[in-house]
Length: 140
Image (cartoon, rainbow, N blue to C red):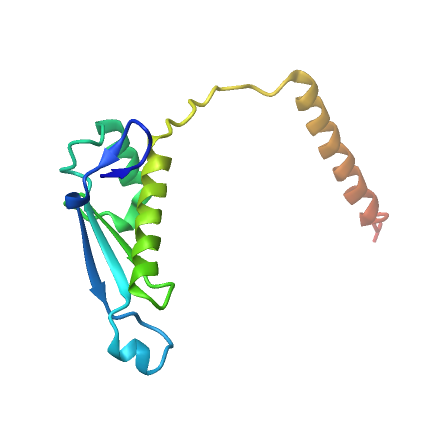
């Protein structure tokens, strides 16, 4: 079990890890060793995730979530498989934790009368400065 919060956990069998060759510099090491990790988590069929968390997770994941609801996380920051595996798991846990937090509802506010006046006075002053820059009009 992978514990996300004290109340929420994910079964390790729901996570699939594939080891792939990392791209980028690294010489022979990069050409020989499959050190990058591709983590696949089927969020759409995970029974432990509540529906609202699943929806927020899809929104937060963006392009990392496939149409089937599978979350893909690629980790190739480190040279070793083990460190990349830990990095991918940490990123998954952090993403789910941020999806658990309910967004605060926006409270509509209106600008105060004083702030409207200040804004208009600032615009008037700015217009006056620009008008004075113009110089006297020619009478030709």
